[in-house]
Image 1 (cartoon, rainbow, N blue to C red):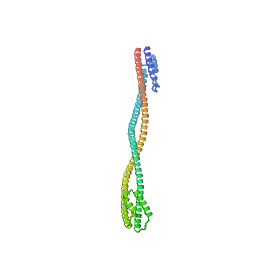
Image 2 (cartoon, rainbow, N blue to C red):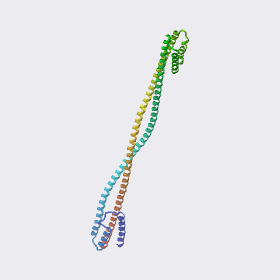
Image 3 (tube, one colour):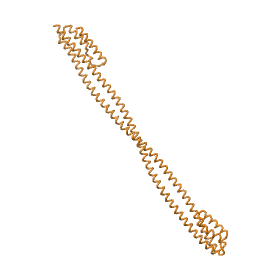
Image 4 (cartoon, rainbow, N blue to C red):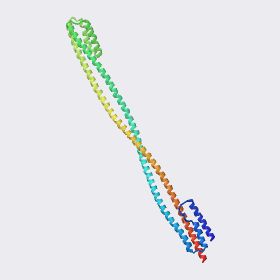
Amino acid sequence: MKVAITLLVVLALANAGMVQKFPLTYGGKRSIMNIMVEVENKIKAHSPLDTIRGVLDNFKSAVAQEQGTHDEVYGAQKTECESEIAYRRAEVEDATGTLKIANGILKTSNILLRKTQATLGEVENILNTVSLHIGLINDARKEDTQSYNRGAVTFNDAINAIDDSLDLAAALAKGGASLIQVAEMTTRLMKASVSTKMNKAFMAPLAALAQITQEDDNVGAAERLAQLLQTLRNNVEEAWASYTAENTNALGLFTQQKDLYLASQGRLDASKGRLSNKAENLQGVISVQTAVAQAATNKKQRNQTLWDDAADLCHSFDVEYNAVTAGRRQELVLVQELERLAERRAAEQQ
């Protein structure tokens, strides 16, 4: 009997060690050691077997009731754990999906932004070139206008010189002109010849003017001079009209070319505006998606940490439940051994 009791004490101490390893609030009002002592005392006192069985049954009931309560608590813990882990898993998956989408948009937006900025730079370069050409066209037209105005003065001076020469011819026919007037008029016609670049056309009138004083028939010479001067005047007017027509055509070409460049400039300006707006919108998208990606990263990290914490806590619940349940089973094993010992002692006492 003492050997059996000693063995039970060893088993009880081992069970107590397990409970100490996982300290719990369960079993605080009962003690397998106390039960063993009480049973041993009752056996020594030759108490009825039913009395001993009653003590053991009460202990088993307490263990069963406590296990039932623990089962309910553990079930609630498992439900809460599964709910929490499922929630955190869903949050992590949601954040992962959001992060994937945001990173995809960021990648595409950055590629589009680089292409847009490159295209915008090319458009700006072309626009600068077009603006330069427009400036060159304006400068060239300004220079041509100044040249035309100078030509207009030149042709006008030439016609005035020819008209004065016609007046001189009329005076010569009447004998009312001096050699000094002839010399002055010759100088003016020569200058007009050079300035209008019509030397060939002026040659005959100048020659007639130079020889007019050598003619005996001044009237006839003056009339021939007048005819030559009139012909010269017609030639100068035709040259002036041709010069004006060429200038008008050149002006039309300049205007046409300028209009083309201005149209290109307008299209390029519009394109630049669209590209600038596109770049600005893409930068806005990048800013927003960067914030979204950061928020999703933070959410993922936070919920992953909570998920891990929940998994650790739930694992501790499993360890606690399994350890305490194993301890109770061991207690029931010890109670069964006590019951068998009590029955054997009762049989020996009969």
